[in-house]
Length: 111
Length: 113
Image: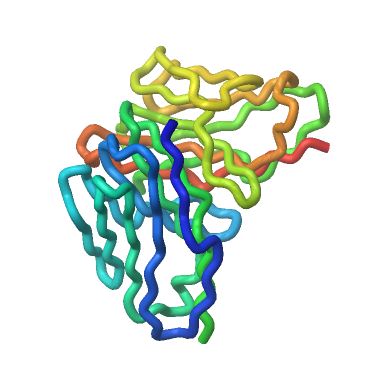
């Protein structure tokens, strides 16, 4: 059974710092991996999707990498801002577009 | 604006009552999903539907029911058989042209009194 783990569970950094969020999964047979952002009490916003054949994706200050063989993905946030404060979730598509989610990393960026 | 809408935003239910959560999308997406989120936990899949008039159970389907009579709509009923229904419920959809990227609605918070 696929399991997704995110480390750390919470992270607090000062504004301007570059940071890395980690996601690991137990079964490398995935179709894609998706990173989401969730603000308190809100739905999920898709940030980046990496197909299984890709190594990384970039959007603005965000860069996500995928190493299927080792079961790892990282989300790199450059020059963090207070507006980046949210919970970040990763999810893997195990087939039939069914996602298995990690428990998230709660990020707080202080001014 | 294209998107996914969920209603109501907050819902209160007495024990023993069935309640139905609405999910509508105007993205012309084929597949729709219902997830449940509990505090400090990731999302768990309740039901999903890949085409109209067809749906499959997810990991935690017990105590829930769904229907998919129209492409745009995928309502979720939380029945009295669901022993711990208080949670945040999220609906999502995927279109064929979106490379399997899932888009989410704003969620419904259900509280059992």
